[in-house]
Image 1 (cartoon, rainbow, N blue to C red):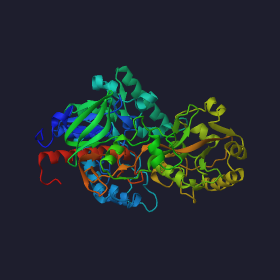
Image 2: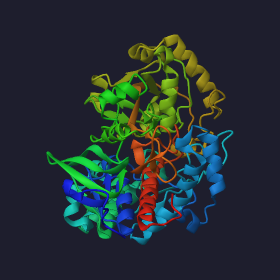
Image 3: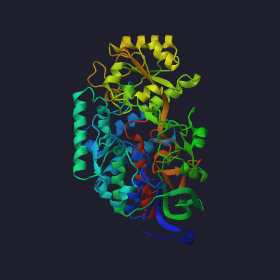
Image 4: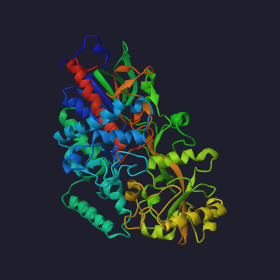
Length: 569
């Protein structure tokens, strides 16, 4: 494999390599793939820490018919996965073409085997259901789930690189909890099964400390493991190095201009540039230009580096974009300290309801987080749904965690963040909700909830809704009346963990121009692209899965092109 190309003048560059990868989430998978294929690879990350949104996440990957499913005999197939895509995503254009869907499913399986061969370890998230499984008119969903997550990892195995990892959930929570365990832990005050899970988590955490390990789970473990294999494969990594622009020569992306520790550097990429960075969740100007409104980014928990430079640079090179108004929505409240708190399990538990300012219920509160955010925007035509209100009765507050807290801090009440009242009329007045509307809505809701049914929005019928509910609450794990005072309420906004629209790519992860032709030398994956999932979120880990799989696909393709394989177009 040649490391030179006479058609370009390497002398005009400060650094020359085969591949430049921008971003250290799924980009680490791309770097490992390129380096293991024999390409000299440089990954650049603008932050001083590695991992970005991936490190801060649950670290889960949604991968149909993956090797772990096959090993455990969990039924799945390409046909089922494509039926699920068709049912949920539908026809949304080239970002989710059949070719991209097939590539995602088939290459996802190959990618996991590749990473396992390099030494990475994964575990199945048994029962972490596809988000639309068992929903009416949806085919191909799996109630047992298609998600995997990294095994617990000792961060100290990275040596000095450990100090370069973005702190993740393990560091923030102080406990080593697997992502698939988090839903059950919300019931630790009430259910023996949840208490056993808490004990297991406690023992796992304590044993790690006794052994002087720095145990990581979730996104921290995923980034740590992928960084380790990328470095072992020979990839170089530069932090504090942000993308400024793409260099285009003779119609081909030939490298990047980057800012490294305040110095401008020109980096030649002989074979490929892979953009595998985040979206623009932290770019207020881009959010104003593209995002659903109202939204200026105040409700996001996207990582600080999620500022959109990769998208803008590629657009400057002629790239097409799609889904720029979408984000990875999740209902959020804004705590007294001004920080958003995301709410997933809380709204899925019995004894809760979400209403607009008129006191009307307008969607199934227990749907997936991205679907919930989309419903909030869809209902906000008259400005009544942003904010909405999550209302809970005293049983809900006594039984389940809220914002990972088992109690109700006095500051929540004195600051007005959480309202509390003895009657529904009073809670309505405190929240600025129409009292008559709220009382009528909850009266109707309670009548059916006591029977375990929801004829209006079918809450609790989907597998994911049952998974996030209270498994011991009969006959519906997600549904119970809101009737026991005092009542509590918090404002909900359509928060997000980052944007999910961006560059249009083909099944090889090549970035497409506005004529839908590939831009030579340029590949992209992750949240800077228009997702193969379209405007939906198919299951836990859909975002990271999209980032990892297409980073892998893109760098496999680049390696084949570099090898002169005539079968590659």
